[in-house]
Image 1 (cartoon, rainbow over the protein chains, first blue to last red):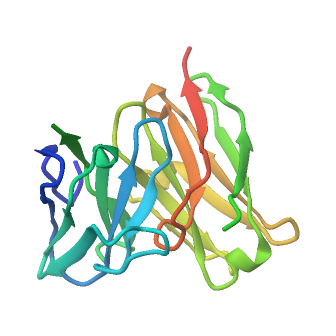
Image 2: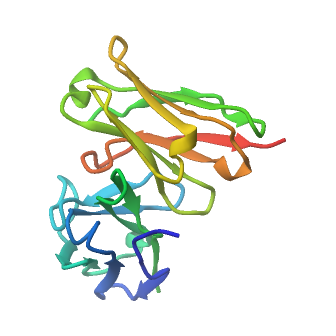
Length: 111
Length: 114
């Protein structure tokens, strides 16, 4: 049971905008940066968004991140078939001695 | 971005100790934490713990009692030991800087089976 909550699935047709939510608390998202990862089938995760809304080099700006209070979201604009993947949010949690926590993941399906 | 190289035993019996090693470049360690992360088949990602070049560690509270992460500065290698494994520890294990590196290594599949 993760301390971060994500919907298990999301879907859209090509070209649509899809948004994935990530809900946390004051000890994680409320205080710390949020990161997003994309995991294509059969591959290792890839960092998609760092520090809430920043793009690593090479990541298209169709992907955008935002954060407000204890919640964050990832938006995929102009959905493409190659965006079909699992998406994970993550953040540092300051409770106990501190630890990094991943959300349970959201499977995005392109219809 | 140079991918880390990982190795270790891929098949363990219950109660044995999982041991993995990850070779990284020296400059990639300086000022950063390296993490171990795992993913059971068909499931999500779980952060195991991290270490920096000074040897400071942070662990997932749910695994802390069984985990030791260490770093050999002479070899630029970090290690993961997880003792008393069960079938629930079957997973692909990654070493990575999850908040820094876009691409992670290929990971190591560790299977625990009697």
